[in-house]
Image (tube, rainbow, N blue to C red; front, side, top):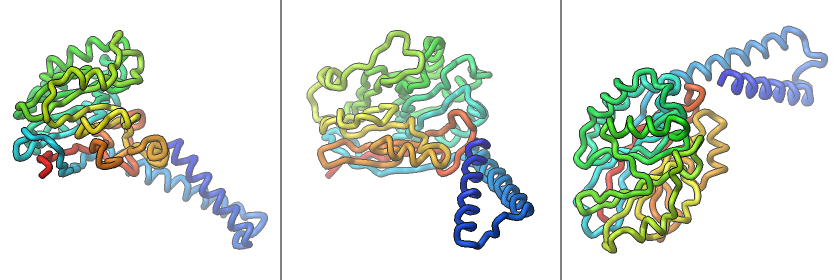
Length: 307
């Protein structure tokens, strides 16, 4: 993170010097004192942005959406809390978990959806898995806590990850579905690009999953960690919940994610026949423990029946 912003501000400083010399504002040759002050400004700006990024990465924001979807059997409203990208085992991830759990409890959700990247490649990087497990088990909901796999939830410790989720009372949906209160179907997808594999587990085609469902006019939601190939989700799907992008995590990463994904953050619907998509920036950090131009967030989604 320090290197990225040091490089950016050095490039910016050199651009200012170049333009200044071209329009004759800066004398040529440039005095040594000016070199020193430009260097000092670069260091101060880098220090300020990195310090803010570290501070902001330890804050948790709350984002909410009101969504109306089709579904004859939906009750008056269902409150889903969506989180993704916990990255347990990464820097500060366990320290942050207690605050995440407390914030989720305050929202009093009916359902919790964890849309992948619960772990950070290696289960053994978690310093105190028992404490993390107890924190997650302390969450109470009306209909349960469900998770789907992200690209960082695989590798040689995959079985230990699955065992951790089971002991934490989190139901992992591997291209499987659960029917909630006979009113809402939740599907969890296997991520298409696991790092190190999911122990032989392969992603199914969404058509095969939908064909296995009862032919009822029940609202369908999907947890799919990576928001790519959204065209696979037809009018049969009402809601897609994703993470993965971190909204770039640090500027200018958001420019890159915005260019790569149809939607890298927020609420999106391509057209009236397409599902509504919500992409969260995630509740944790990957790699550098910094957030600049994005936030760690917990998302609450109030789902109601379309009139």
